[in-house]
Length: 205
Image 1 (cartoon, rainbow, N blue to C red):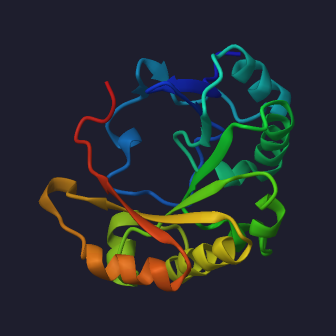
Image 2 (cartoon, rainbow, N blue to C red):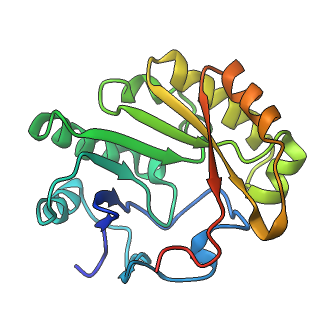
């Protein structure tokens, strides 16, 4: 299989489960390049198993943290994500597991998936990307209406499940600035911390 399902970046492992996404963020790295540190992130097919992911994972030097984050929304492969996370927790109990997500999973599956993840992951990082629906829609370009409220509800659900939850915003995209203080208030009200991600023009080389 030529798919890159697991890769190293700055000494940490990342897992690339899908190229599908319910957003088309204007600042997404995949709009400008095909690779991360020389590894092509575009999958040649979406038909693979958790064991395929685990096989690639086992070929990498184990790191202190593993993050589900690639060129798509990892929660769209929820069953595989949970199976791989369970494997990691059992084999490497000291490794922290993080999911980077757009926060649409509860809308997609019509249930609270955070309850299913609370014993499998340590941190969920959710893209808040704006102070209101208008700004969120401009930056994230979601594929359905009401996405911003879904994201906020997901952040709260994750926090309520007892998972360490971080809301993120991308700052500085082509000179555009976010109201960081307001985003932090929103995140805190939902039970999360805020992390500001500086926009990287050319991504990782």
